[in-house]
Image (cartoon, rainbow, N blue to C red; front, side, top):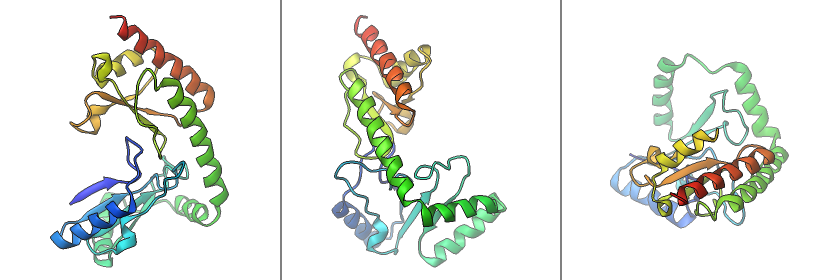
Length: 221
Protein backbone atom coordinates (compact mmCIF):
# COMPACT_ATOMS: atom_id res chain seq x y z
CA UNK A 1 0.00 0.00 0.00
CA UNK A 2 1.13 3.54 -0.80
CA UNK A 3 -0.46 6.22 1.38
CA UNK A 4 0.16 9.85 0.51
CA UNK A 5 -1.53 13.24 0.65
CA UNK A 6 -2.09 15.84 -2.04
CA UNK A 7 -1.86 18.69 -1.25
CA UNK A 8 0.80 17.48 1.13
CA UNK A 9 1.06 17.93 4.87
CA UNK A 10 3.58 19.22 6.03
CA UNK A 11 5.10 20.83 2.92
CA UNK A 12 2.02 22.13 1.12
CA UNK A 13 3.24 20.62 -2.16
CA UNK A 14 0.71 19.63 -4.82
CA UNK A 15 1.28 16.54 -6.98
CA UNK A 16 1.01 17.24 -10.71
CA UNK A 17 -1.44 15.38 -12.93
CA UNK A 18 1.27 13.55 -14.89
CA UNK A 19 2.85 12.16 -11.72
CA UNK A 20 -0.52 11.08 -10.28
CA UNK A 21 -1.49 9.34 -13.51
CA UNK A 22 1.76 7.39 -13.50
CA UNK A 23 1.30 6.47 -9.83
CA UNK A 24 -2.17 5.08 -10.61
CA UNK A 25 -0.76 3.10 -13.53
CA UNK A 26 2.01 1.60 -11.37
CA UNK A 27 -0.52 0.69 -8.67
CA UNK A 28 -2.55 -1.30 -11.18
CA UNK A 29 0.50 -2.86 -12.85
CA UNK A 30 1.95 -4.11 -9.58
CA UNK A 31 -1.31 -4.69 -7.71
CA UNK A 32 -0.49 -2.09 -5.06
CA UNK A 33 -3.21 -0.16 -3.24
CA UNK A 34 -2.83 3.59 -3.73
CA UNK A 35 -4.57 5.67 -1.04
CA UNK A 36 -4.76 9.41 -1.64
CA UNK A 37 -5.57 11.58 1.38
CA UNK A 38 -7.01 14.90 0.17
CA UNK A 39 -8.35 17.06 3.04
CA UNK A 40 -6.65 20.22 1.70
CA UNK A 41 -7.92 19.89 -1.88
CA UNK A 42 -9.78 23.22 -1.74
CA UNK A 43 -6.99 25.16 0.00
CA UNK A 44 -4.75 25.75 -3.01
CA UNK A 45 -3.17 29.05 -4.02
CA UNK A 46 -1.57 30.73 -7.01
CA UNK A 47 -1.48 28.67 -10.24
CA UNK A 48 -1.58 25.22 -8.67
CA UNK A 49 -4.63 23.03 -9.16
CA UNK A 50 -5.80 19.85 -7.50
CA UNK A 51 -6.04 16.56 -9.38
CA UNK A 52 -7.00 13.30 -7.70
CA UNK A 53 -5.60 9.95 -8.83
CA UNK A 54 -9.21 8.80 -8.76
CA UNK A 55 -9.60 10.72 -12.01
CA UNK A 56 -7.78 7.89 -13.76
CA UNK A 57 -10.02 5.13 -12.44
CA UNK A 58 -10.63 3.46 -9.09
CA UNK A 59 -8.93 0.13 -9.72
CA UNK A 60 -6.30 -0.15 -6.95
CA UNK A 61 -7.07 3.47 -5.97
CA UNK A 62 -8.93 4.87 -2.97
CA UNK A 63 -9.53 8.57 -2.29
CA UNK A 64 -10.20 9.63 1.30
CA UNK A 65 -11.24 13.09 2.35
CA UNK A 66 -12.41 15.06 5.35
CA UNK A 67 -14.60 18.04 6.16
CA UNK A 68 -12.11 19.14 8.84
CA UNK A 69 -9.96 21.50 6.76
CA UNK A 70 -12.05 22.91 3.91
CA UNK A 71 -15.13 23.44 6.06
CA UNK A 72 -13.41 24.00 9.45
CA UNK A 73 -15.25 21.02 10.98
CA UNK A 74 -12.19 19.45 12.64
CA UNK A 75 -13.96 18.58 15.89
CA UNK A 76 -16.88 16.88 14.16
CA UNK A 77 -14.93 13.88 12.84
CA UNK A 78 -16.64 13.30 9.53
CA UNK A 79 -15.18 12.35 6.17
CA UNK A 80 -15.71 10.06 3.21
CA UNK A 81 -14.03 7.58 0.86
CA UNK A 82 -14.29 7.12 -2.89
CA UNK A 83 -13.28 3.61 -3.94
CA UNK A 84 -14.50 0.42 -5.57
CA UNK A 85 -17.64 -1.02 -4.00
CA UNK A 86 -15.98 -4.11 -2.48
CA UNK A 87 -13.48 -1.91 -0.63
CA UNK A 88 -16.13 0.48 0.65
CA UNK A 89 -18.25 -2.42 1.92
CA UNK A 90 -15.27 -3.88 3.75
CA UNK A 91 -14.41 -0.55 5.34
CA UNK A 92 -18.00 -0.10 6.48
CA UNK A 93 -17.76 -3.35 8.46
CA UNK A 94 -14.54 -2.22 10.12
CA UNK A 95 -15.96 1.23 10.87
CA UNK A 96 -19.06 -0.26 12.51
CA UNK A 97 -16.86 -1.87 15.17
CA UNK A 98 -14.82 1.27 15.79
CA UNK A 99 -17.60 3.85 15.88
CA UNK A 100 -21.27 2.89 15.99
CA UNK A 101 -22.37 5.80 13.80
CA UNK A 102 -21.69 9.40 12.86
CA UNK A 103 -24.00 11.90 14.57
CA UNK A 104 -26.93 12.86 12.27
CA UNK A 105 -26.43 16.61 12.77
CA UNK A 106 -22.83 16.39 11.54
CA UNK A 107 -23.99 14.50 8.46
CA UNK A 108 -26.62 17.18 7.81
CA UNK A 109 -23.99 19.91 8.19
CA UNK A 110 -21.61 18.11 5.83
CA UNK A 111 -24.34 17.68 3.23
CA UNK A 112 -25.27 21.35 3.47
CA UNK A 113 -21.63 22.39 3.14
CA UNK A 114 -21.13 20.30 0.00
CA UNK A 115 -24.24 21.70 -1.64
CA UNK A 116 -24.12 25.34 -0.59
CA UNK A 117 -20.71 26.58 0.52
CA UNK A 118 -18.93 27.37 -2.77
CA UNK A 119 -18.71 31.09 -1.95
CA UNK A 120 -17.50 30.39 1.58
CA UNK A 121 -14.71 28.12 0.32
CA UNK A 122 -13.33 30.82 -1.94
CA UNK A 123 -13.53 33.45 0.80
CA UNK A 124 -11.59 31.23 3.21
CA UNK A 125 -9.05 30.37 0.54
CA UNK A 126 -8.32 34.04 -0.02
CA UNK A 127 -8.01 34.59 3.73
CA UNK A 128 -5.51 31.74 4.03
CA UNK A 129 -3.56 33.06 1.05
CA UNK A 130 -3.26 36.48 2.68
CA UNK A 131 -2.17 34.91 5.95
CA UNK A 132 0.35 32.72 4.14
CA UNK A 133 1.94 35.70 2.42
CA UNK A 134 2.08 37.66 5.67
CA UNK A 135 3.64 34.94 7.79
CA UNK A 136 6.02 33.36 5.29
CA UNK A 137 7.34 36.72 4.07
CA UNK A 138 7.91 37.72 7.70
CA UNK A 139 9.96 34.66 8.71
CA UNK A 140 11.51 33.30 5.51
CA UNK A 141 14.76 35.25 5.92
CA UNK A 142 15.21 33.74 9.36
CA UNK A 143 13.90 30.29 8.42
CA UNK A 144 14.09 29.59 4.69
CA UNK A 145 11.59 27.30 3.01
CA UNK A 146 9.49 27.00 -0.11
CA UNK A 147 6.39 29.21 -0.32
CA UNK A 148 3.65 26.58 0.11
CA UNK A 149 1.33 26.36 -2.91
CA UNK A 150 -1.41 24.83 -0.75
CA UNK A 151 -2.59 24.00 2.81
CA UNK A 152 -2.04 26.40 5.73
CA UNK A 153 1.42 25.16 6.71
CA UNK A 154 4.94 26.48 6.23
CA UNK A 155 7.74 23.89 6.37
CA UNK A 156 11.01 25.62 7.15
CA UNK A 157 14.63 24.53 7.42
CA UNK A 158 16.79 24.85 10.54
CA UNK A 159 20.12 23.35 9.40
CA UNK A 160 21.66 26.80 8.77
CA UNK A 161 21.25 27.53 12.49
CA UNK A 162 23.25 24.49 13.58
CA UNK A 163 20.24 23.05 15.46
CA UNK A 164 17.59 20.51 14.63
CA UNK A 165 13.87 21.15 14.47
CA UNK A 166 13.22 19.73 17.92
CA UNK A 167 15.66 22.17 19.52
CA UNK A 168 14.12 25.13 17.74
CA UNK A 169 10.61 24.10 18.82
CA UNK A 170 11.79 23.90 22.43
CA UNK A 171 13.15 27.45 22.17
CA UNK A 172 9.88 28.63 20.64
CA UNK A 173 7.88 27.07 23.46
CA UNK A 174 9.86 29.24 25.88
CA UNK A 175 8.38 32.20 23.95
CA UNK A 176 4.86 30.76 24.29
CA UNK A 177 4.74 29.70 20.66
CA UNK A 178 4.09 26.25 19.20
CA UNK A 179 5.39 24.56 16.06
CA UNK A 180 5.86 20.93 15.06
CA UNK A 181 9.38 19.47 14.70
CA UNK A 182 10.05 17.91 11.33
CA UNK A 183 11.16 14.52 12.66
CA UNK A 184 7.54 13.75 13.59
CA UNK A 185 6.78 13.59 9.86
CA UNK A 186 9.57 11.12 9.17
CA UNK A 187 13.32 10.55 9.23
CA UNK A 188 13.76 12.75 6.16
CA UNK A 189 13.20 16.01 8.07
CA UNK A 190 15.06 16.22 11.39
CA UNK A 191 16.25 19.74 10.54
CA UNK A 192 12.86 21.27 9.82
CA UNK A 193 9.79 22.68 11.56
CA UNK A 194 6.18 23.08 10.50
CA UNK A 195 4.26 26.25 11.30
CA UNK A 196 0.53 26.79 10.87
CA UNK A 197 -0.63 30.15 9.52
CA UNK A 198 -4.32 29.49 10.14
CA UNK A 199 -4.49 32.03 12.98
CA UNK A 200 -5.70 35.65 12.60
CA UNK A 201 -3.27 38.18 11.15
CA UNK A 202 -2.47 39.92 14.43
CA UNK A 203 -1.49 36.59 15.98
CA UNK A 204 0.67 35.77 12.96
CA UNK A 205 2.49 39.10 13.20
CA UNK A 206 3.23 38.50 16.88
CA UNK A 207 4.27 34.93 16.17
CA UNK A 208 6.61 35.97 13.36
CA UNK A 209 8.30 38.45 15.69
CA UNK A 210 8.90 35.70 18.24
CA UNK A 211 10.27 33.37 15.58
CA UNK A 212 12.72 36.01 14.39
CA UNK A 213 13.78 36.78 17.96
CA UNK A 214 14.48 33.12 18.69
CA UNK A 215 16.43 32.66 15.46
CA UNK A 216 18.50 35.76 16.17
CA UNK A 217 19.35 34.51 19.66
CA UNK A 218 20.47 31.16 18.23
CA UNK A 219 22.74 32.89 15.73
CA UNK A 220 24.49 34.70 18.58
CA UNK A 221 25.49 31.46 20.32
